[in-house]
Amino acid sequence: MHSKVYGKRFKTIPDNVSGVAVSSHCPRANCSAHQEIANLEREADETSQTLIFCEAWEVVHLARPKRAYVYEQPQEEKKLSLTLRLAGVCRQWRAVALSLPRIWADVHIFMHRQKGEPTLSILRDIIGRSKQANLTIRMHSDPIDELSRIQQLQPALAILRKVSKRWRSLQICLPIHIIKDLFTPDMDLSRISSLYLHSNQDQHSLLFNSDSWHNKSLRPERLSLDSLTFQSIDIAWDRVTHVVAHHFTTDQAMEVIHSAPNLTSFELMQADEESEVTGLYATEIVHENLRHVIYKVLCSELIEAETIFSYCLFPSLTRVEHAVLSRTSDDSFMDHLIRIPHLSRS
Image (cartoon, rainbow, N blue to C red):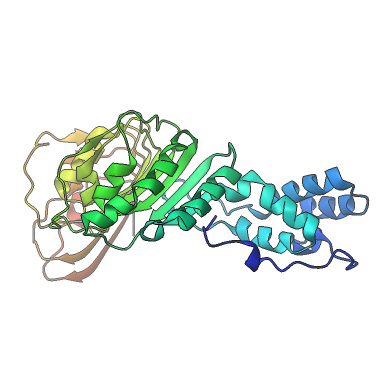
């Protein structure tokens, strides 16, 4: 729930307006659940109204099936727009909407605005309204290069840390310094299944600290990192099945393959082919579970660029998607795929 969403955005319909039905707000008018809600509305007492609301809440989010091999970045929930419509039915419906913990369980925070007691009180209120619901935390900020500004954000980070056991999904785009301040070594983060962790801080910033942060209780299944955050955190990889990697060098990509035995989908976005390969993984690696690879590079200038296919074998691989924005030489990437005869290429 965005910290700016409050009563002013609710269009309240007077209680004496006839013919207002929550079923009319369901976007899937022909679904069986819609018909069931419509039937319940005809004879709904006060208790039933809450049940109807909860049913409508669940019905609206019949998301399209996710492709098993693709990590999807968390999106704004459709449930919020439904909640706003339902809250406009009448004052009683508005009260139900504002009291339902699941509505407040998707917390979207612009960290650079979290300073001063009025703003912090809104964040506390949102967290409090979520009660014991599992939380999705989305944190963003403008680039911050002043230590004094980072210090101002510590109270907001403390509020979030107190409910870390309820975190299930994290989507974070912050300076590395703030990311490290959010996490503490003693946190139990084992319940987090989805982690999107990107930095908007230049590694040449005066505040950049190359020391890595360690917490082996963090064992996500879906993971999205950029090169900088990959260098800065140390997690457990045993449950990771999907990885989206931005600006990774071949060495970093090889480290993921070596560390994640259950990896089935690997997306290398804007892969870095120019950094020298150290040869750390000189012995050819055989990864048994990887089935899908997306490999995208902005510019291919090296005739014999070394990629993960130069050092690895993937016997279960069935699909590779390869894209180059600009090419200045013959691309050797596809040559490495010839030894995978059953492969689907695009």
